[in-house]
Length: 495
Image (tube, rainbow, N blue to C red; front, side, top):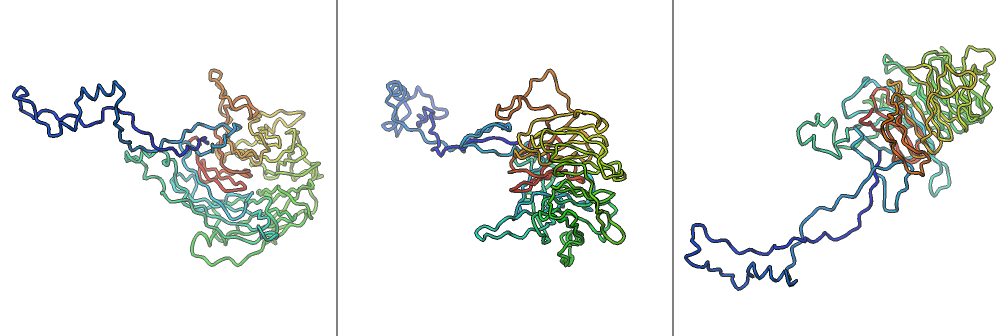
């Protein structure tokens, strides 16, 4: 959540307007009877009597200038900012730390527009701050300023450390009372340690293979990238994780362990690992399946073909290892079964009025799927109703630009996260029902909607052009997002 604040002008501190601050006449000495005589005042000629002071004030002749009082600068005025509202020239957004348990921003040398969370051996359901998170990402470096040449891209293995609790930044009252839960962290900044692997071409999409908690350090940890060159590269990042985690020799392997060339020169953005294998989809509407055999990776020569335009995203079914779903710029979402003959989709639906950019399959409710479109819409589908002309079970038109990422919460089956090109990251809870007695929260007219949907749980802002968002599966409620300018890691008090 964000607040808007105005920049205060540099003004001199205000002068005191209090009156009667002159030196008062000393009182009579204790135990002295005033009837015995008048108290002799050595400063009688220099001090005006009270009657004279009052008379002077009444006649406007008070020449006394009161002393300036020491005072701290007045705090900048703030108010809650609703997305879509206009900012004045002297206004800027600042985070409202009272709604975050933790909020950290980290940046890398080059934009990293796709990433995935790596499973670690630090345990599940971690709640104690500070946290540590492992991710893998890829760069889109672009041209080197002033040189006219393209920078070398990389696959980067990152350890995000000291992700401390930050809610106390705005309110330290608990700490003063001694009930600070040992602060659950430190005052130091979050850290970013990394190792990189050279990569040919920009990384359009990167995904890590699923691993089990029983996986040992000797087992490979496969990561796949879809390059702008049209090639899909598979790396083993286990040696890099081991090196960052402790004393270990620097990895010597600098090249992918396997490269898929079936897409030709057609680049793509759809990459998805599953129990059956690796799915990759390209802008030439082709989907290929790569499986791991005792002799290595093998890619089927025949693609899955039913879409009529670019394949934008892919998702394996969480319950049926041979079933997957796809999203396409042809505005459809399709469901496939690798056992079906002809390599055609089984069912499909025209899901959005424009390109379907992203989809996510609910891990706990096997028939729920959420999709995000180019028009900014978010729709939740019941796959059991994918017959005829189905309608979504939920439809949210909050974002005002293309949806760039969606992902269901790993354990809460009613919650999902989404991001858009409107610089918003939103959290939604389908279990919230509208309260008919509650007045709607009206948003600025420029947002294009009349009221805040009751299912809208949280709005996170502050990044520029948010591209991907993921929940951390081992740290409940932790969200990680990447944008053109930074990574954000946060936990809210509502999740």
